[in-house]
Image 1 (cartoon, helix red, strand yellow):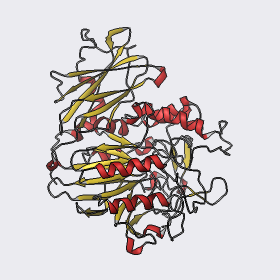
Image 2 (cartoon, one colour):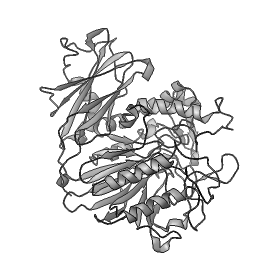
Image 3 (spheres, one colour):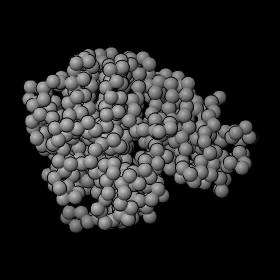
Image 4 (tube, helix red, strand yellow):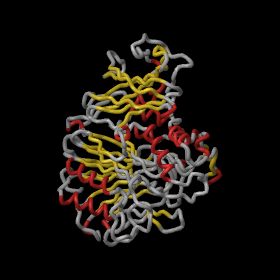
Length: 524
């Protein structure tokens, strides 16, 4: 593969947070430089970049007190002749978080940045700068693209375990020098409180770092904020965020398990039973803790397309906000489905407009895996497939419409990526094996969790003819990260041939499965 050389990222990863202290402080808001002292704003939660394109990106930070956000960028780590960006005033209204858009950046280049927090009343009083970097997408096909994906963090009672070194999977992902990280949802488990210890098989004990906000299910805005803050206590994640930009989507656990709009909870742990109220608070916290371009706009949304040069467009779906109520999912008509009509039409329109060689559909839920929702004691369906291998029913109807559209519009290079089910697998969907046949073959790859309980494989639904080509999953439910079964995936697009290689990897980076796809084919 032709890929941009990047000397030093791995060494920087190991010392990214410590290195920032060695930098001399720049001028803040036109004032003379001043060294950080106690009582000045601090950014102890690190920095992160997101939604990076060929010429733009977003930089995020959180302060420990009111502060003015300032970003400086440079082509080198020395920060000679830096370019300055004046960001927002950070205050309690956003839990002291803020995002600054960077525009007019050079394509295919390493952007070094540092964030300063200045006292709003005295610009000379600045805290220690916190540094990060990211690569802008290249406008040149020959440079290639590499990214990683996964999902599901701190779920089922498994949080940051200091005995195991915390979220170690981020170190393995960062070692691959990816252009970005695609998180397929469940960035937090707002419905999953943590205890200090959990008993493991064989007399072992799992230890969690705990916080007040993780002691109960999240209901208030402050509790949702605390859930997002919790993960940033992990040094592996902070170091990864400082060197790898993200594309973030959400799923159910950012709010509560298997939620849908209009739901009234029967869960006795909640005093607030109205899911719409919880979802509104969760959405606000989600938008404040991740740099997401579309959520910054009026009426902001999670679904979007991220253009990453001539080789790749990433279509980020939202299968949570617009879905209908979970049910047996076997109705013969379903105009709302799991995407809603407006999002489905948006997706079809953007796919037809895309000129990228590869079109990754980032789905927060799998297509042909049966994911049940038995929370109210009924045999309801949480995802799309309901186990009936016949013609499409319920939410499957929207997928059938989309797959038919891809075939008849001759849209090439579509690949589906997801997480959600807490194991890793590869499914090839083939019309020759399907009840619904008006589509071209395509691949769906599953990888996760990042740090959560692992679960046995879900059954397949034959409507779209999935063939499970690879699978690694435990045989018992909620296997802890101490016993393995933590996964991520890698996508490598060669700038010369245009081939797309998917590798499914374990927590330490070991490759479990490899699939090479050829460009230029309808579906895939």
